[in-house]
Length: 226
Image (cartoon, rainbow, N blue to C red; front, side, top):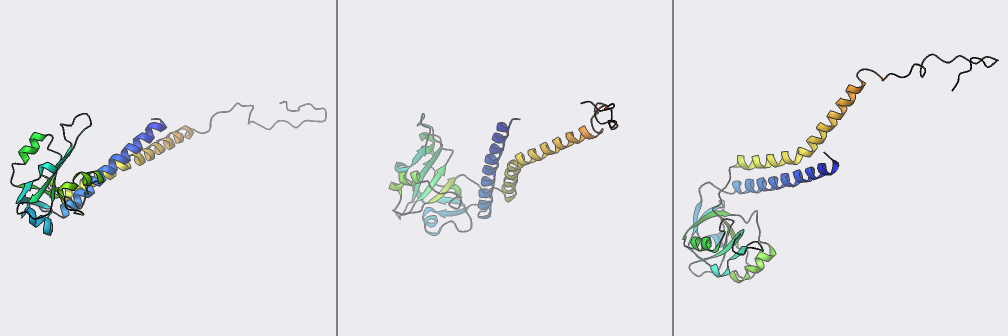
């Protein structure tokens, strides 16, 4: 493998391993804040009091603000959505916003079908995710000035702590792959060099390092020739 390929491989491992570690850390953080069983609460309760010690929530008592919903889509296909935010507000008219976030509502029809549901389940992810500046600007019409909305990730469930730790461990292993490869490569080169010298030094011509040349006498006979 050439030096450039080794560098690309190392960078790829660091990026992929770092992403896995980040994902595993966030899942572990959420698992410690959540229960497998969601807590039932109204939209007003979530806005006023937060999720408490269980980020896994079954939410009711809201209405869908579809007029102010936003969706992320590719430039060449505005009808297919990567990510959607739908503002939810308490049905009693109280101010406050829960942002229903989803990666699984790919088009207008799926959003309209979701809007027929009187209860949503998911996880409050404010501890690991914040709105970007562009998202905040697009959602301003749905929120009060300066409001920090609750972000509810639709249908998300907490992962077991063991699973999250496994993701973290896997990410660490991927990041260490280039270093492990370098160590193995160095060991192999050292071993090959040792094999070359195992049979002793290479043979040299007999005239090179044999008996000392005779000392020249007064007549110059016996003088070594070079």
